[in-house]
Image 1 (tube, rainbow, N blue to C red):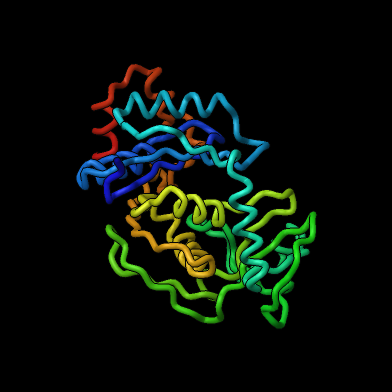
Image 2: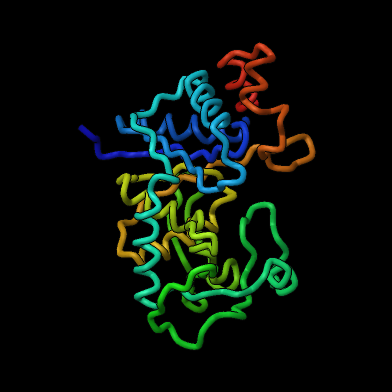
Length: 271
């Protein structure tokens, strides 16, 4: 029987988990336990070029080694494409999505703001944005963007960082929801899955605050329930750069091979 609190872990199998993941996952586990709730696991394997089974296996081993327990079954995004397609077609039918023909080179040239390490998508200038939000039909081989409202302040109360406000057109613009290879964007897949899994609170890193604002807009457009958010602080290396999968020396798998114990890793996170 599922309790009222439902959290989730949502790693992508494109590399080994590192200390930053451990910090976020421990927080998610702590909050689920504190609410006597359920913690689910979602394998976000929608990058066919980079997702590998060896990383899935390592992910499961690392979670077990860290002592983080989750409730089966594991949700696998690559097995849920029909759900994402249905949601995308609803966005098309309601005029919330439009095709974008801009190449990567054009996008790089037209950026209104530099690509920040804490954001996964620059502010789009609106080159392909139509003058109206009339319903549209799907065209294969096209990227599609979500049309954000002009100049709207997206506000939410974060469980860790307090009141947050991000403004459309300033902090983020029209964002990708469907790729020309026939796959959903991270933003769309995440919103659809969180609703389907009945997630009540999303625990993730502070680098995804803008993604949260985007996903709130998608929830509204798709008439999906809102969720609570808890953004954790980012771990950084000795140069002040946030940890990423390229930091192989700080991967949980590597630390395990070096003989570190569960408590050793916890101490590194609390240092």
